[in-house]
Structures are given as structure tokens and as C-alpha cells.
Length: 389
Image 1 (tube, one colour):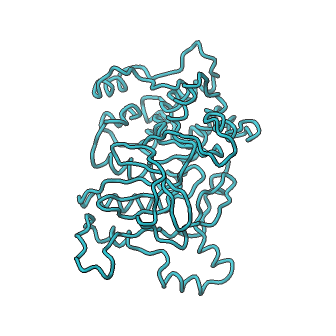
Image 2: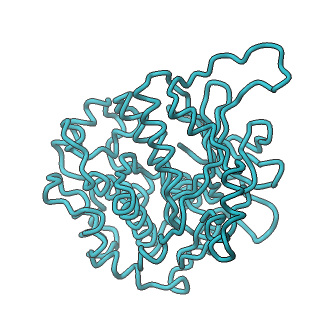
Image 3: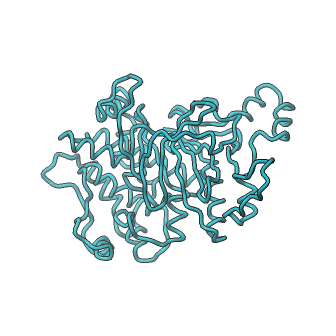
């Protein structure tokens, strides 16, 4: 599968963002914004439809004008893209209606929202902002990274705006939910997830990791089942590699919540190499295959860290009919010495992934699979799907 074909881009997309301010006819002064970084405020205040941009488009000719005004939102795996329904709009809190709450975590809350002027549905994440200048520099960097990422394996970023003292980040809504909610649903139904489906999940995650690293020099750092989501078309995507993952962890230095998936080198205080994401992928796939967390549940946080570093890595039970290729793939992902562990690009060459990549949608119908998981019929009724962050 060619990454280059799917990720070729013609332009830098416009960011649909706006910083809240008081109406022009307001008699009372606006409160001082929580954000005190001028570059970040400038970035959030940038209007994608300003006169200079309109003049630029007016001066452009035919195909070039169309290319420059096209913002590549959810691309399909064959590299096609559609027009951005939000191209002519600046995202504002007053234009959003909350449809339902999707999840809540240490980094903020996620809701399904509708953009009233267009009827476009998105997932909106509220992130609590810190006036710390270091936080705001990282925030600006992460928003720019989100804005540049356009891949069929990465959840699409639509824009951001300030909503009170919180940053609202608008992302693609993946109605199939997270892999955590999916495997819990499968377990509730007394069923299991086939190895062919696990192959497609692993393949998509690795494509996303390779894209982030090769195209944007980004390491995910927070890979886990709740950060892998799926659409009702069966497309697997990565989320939370930016503001709510790397950014918050860099400043808070917390082990709570994500310690299950930390690679030994990170626990021991070493640098975070790209191979650390491969360790997290291995643990994630063991968890999805077993439909439960692979570590003992009675360990305190620091006991868990000691266990990860010093005890044998989790593996699939020998009495279960998993293939030798899948078992070896997992063992390669979870080599404790990161210098010997493959990178995402290297593990893509593993037999398990190569065999998965040649299976067609007819061989592994991910669309039919996710709809069967949620008993979803092709109708206007959407299933009630829990999501986590």
C-alpha cells in the first residue's frame, strides 16, 4: 500500500479557528484572555476567509484556484478527497449544538456536536488551558501539527477556538467508537475478534504511525485501544496523538491512565524513541485480541511500572488458535530492548502485516464487521456507542 499516493497534498489547509471576544457594541471591556502567548493568539485569531486570501483565490486560475481552495478532509484509502463543508466558515461556539457527550478523561471532555450553519457533525474536545508559557508554546505547535495532518489513518482536524477558558478542538466524528468500546461490545455478545480483522487494525495503525513519523516527525506517545477509532465504513484511524496526549503528558509527567501501555525505556526515564509506539501497539493488540487488559488488575501504579520492566511480556495463551505469524508479530513488537525492537516502518515488513495488506475488502469486510458489532442497519438510526478518551 503506497503511503505517498494517499498523502500527497497540494496546499497547506486553512485552519478554521477564532478567539472569543466581546461584540463590537459591548459597553463592558472583554476579560483578559487566558492565553497570553501572542503567537498563539494570532494563530487562533486567523480567519481563513480574510480579504487577502479571497484576493489570492480570485487571482488564481482554474485548476490552481480549485487546488488551493480545497482542504483535503477525510481522504479515502485510495487517496481521493472531498470538498471541505466548513471551508467558508469560522468555527464559533454559538454555532455549535451538543448532540451528546461521548467521553471524559483527565485531558478534557469529548462531545458529538453539530455545526448549525452546515449541519456538519464533528467530535469536539474541550481541553483545559494553562497560562504557563511552555504549555502555550506546545499548544501552538500541536495545533499546527494537527492542521497539517491529512491521512486516511489519522482522525481529521477541522479547527479550534476558545470557549471560555477552554480550548475546543473539532475533529472528525468516528461513529464506530474506539477499539476499547468495540472489544467490550464483542465480549458482551459472547463473540471474538478474528485474526484477519486484527490484521487490518494493526496494518492501519502502523500506516498511521509511519505517516506521523515520516511526514511530520511526530511520535504518537499515547497509543492504546481508546485512541484507535473506527468509522461505520470500517476505516481505522488514530487520534489523540497531539494536544491531549503528547502535550498534556509532557507537562504533567503523569503515569495515571496510560502506564499500562508505556514502553520500558520510557518508564526507566530514557528518551522516547519511535520504537516505543511499537511496544504500545503490541500491548494494544494483545488487549484487543483477548478483550481484556493484559496485566494483573490488582497492581498499584508503581507496582505496575516495576512489573512492566521486570516481568515477562504479555502474550496470547498457548491453547488458543492464533497463528504463528501473529504471535511472532506481537513478540517482535514487545522486545524489551528498544534498540533491538523494530520501528513502525520496519515492522510493516513483518509477514503478518504483509499478508494482511494483500487481503482485499472482499476478503476482510471491515464495514460489515463493525456494523455487525453494533447491530447497525443501513438506516438513519444511529446506535448508542460509548467512546472513551
